[in-house]
Length: 311
Image (tube, rainbow, N blue to C red):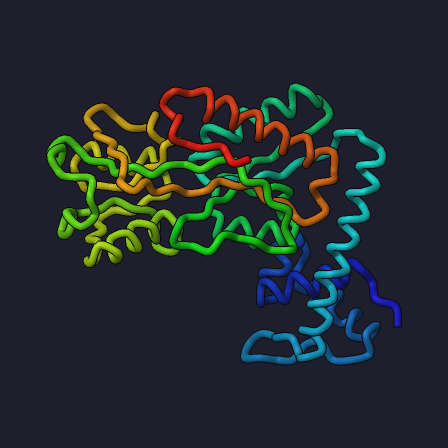
């Protein structure tokens, strides 16, 4: 039995994405090409890997077993490639970075600019999206580095498939518009007050819901955005109150009051790459630039002193 690595990648994508069409889109193949690759892999494996399910297909038990092994095979291949690149010590190639919005505004541009200035043969692609979407995409190889965050109500992401660098702790403050300046910075006192939050399913939505539930009430969320520039603009127009991270404070329009919580509430900002990829020179160089950007943008900015760097 000889299994082709490229076809194992197709199987792994199908296991993650669920449909031939989504797999084809992710790999820039046609659906018929995906089907042909999987049919060939079945012949190589000598067992049925797929079965009809409604209008589509799903993996058989053997297909799921092989997909799990494919994850390990592809991870080991990437680790081997990373070690070979590290032996050459040349920083070159294309780096694909994904970041949540506030870090994409303040941290990532400085890190990417530093990387390109130091290594002119590098090309960088940057995407602004929520970690709930980008972390699964990192696992599938769509990105090389992803910036994410952990909120106190979430279990920290500790996955052996990822290499993690904790960058800093970003303090969250309550944001009040002009007509609500007299309200206390206390979730228990904000029952019935309208809220502006992140979109449902995001951590920036969940932190508002969790904090209000802990205070004994359901938040009345009237507007949602994943852009703190939009959130703080809505707060400034008195559409509601919100929680805003310290690194987003410079987006606050005049008239927005930002108040610390007691006890303080933080989210931890981190960078992830696939385990072993941290040895790739281009990834290692970018992680160094991220640390330097945090030192400048977080430690060096008087407005950001509450964001505590992580050792």
